[in-house]
Length: 236
Image 1: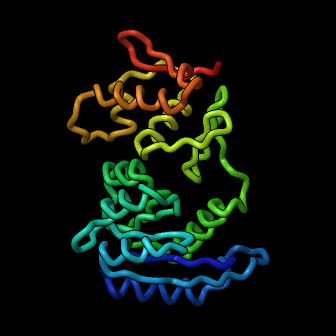
Image 2 (image 1 turned 45 degrees about the vertical axis):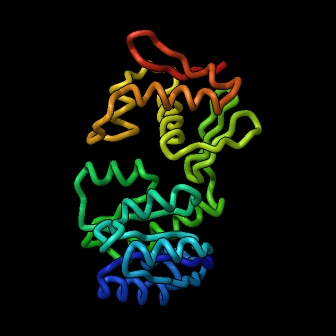
């Protein structure tokens, strides 16, 4: 498999180790079976601004981001990247607290690797994510009454029409589909989609539900309001 990887990491030593390992690796070590050969090109950046400039040039199959970067941190960079790109993202960081993991996933990262880490495991995760993104493995599909979600590629359809959803709208739709047929309170939706540290009102849920229904068109009626309890998504 041939791929190009962007590594955004401010520690020069870690950058060099990853670059050397990935550039020289031809297959997954210890796999026990014959593996296809890999040709991996690693492009590196030492801070968030440099990483963002490289991302704007395009052409990457996967991005590995450190969180604690000088200037623009990894969370901010991921947020900007997700505005117009579905490239797989792995956070590589010393921050392993649950709230950091949740924030990363809510921003749209695909995996989270905590330092110190195994190069072999990181390599295997990179290959798995790229193969999934390239459609080389069976794709995960979530579907209900004309609404179809491809979570690995962050694509959603209403009937045959592809939807232009914001990251939060996509995360909200995914959460509703994951809990199809169940009534979910506004508080639970807020925690699951916006995170534990969100300081706004739960009315933000109502606003996003309204926008999501509008974008779903005739399929928006599948999102039911359960008075004094929350919301439920059912098929037609």
